[in-house]
Image: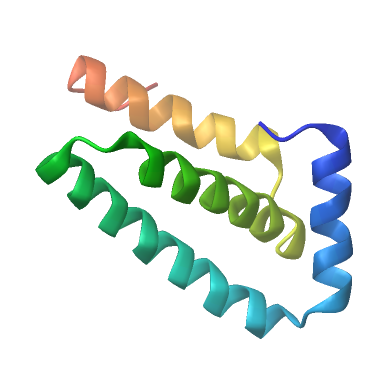
Amino acid sequence: MLNKENRHRCSRVIDIYPKDNQLHIAQEELAELIQAISKYIRYGDVEPLLEEYADVVIMMEQLQQIFHIDAAEVNKRADKKLYRVLEGKVAP
């Protein structure tokens, strides 16, 4: 989802800050997204949700790089989960 330059920026952040620090930040950003969703439900304000969504996208990219997560493997797992949700079954 991030463009090439922003993926590179994520790599630079990982080089500066230790992995444990990035994991704590990822937890914080995910919690902030949960709060923003709650506020959207209550007040209808989408701006904080968009801001926190962007933060989470950045953190997901960093986690992907930190843990060497293969995008094809993520898509394979997403296929199975989405199939199960839409079809009420497990993909073959």
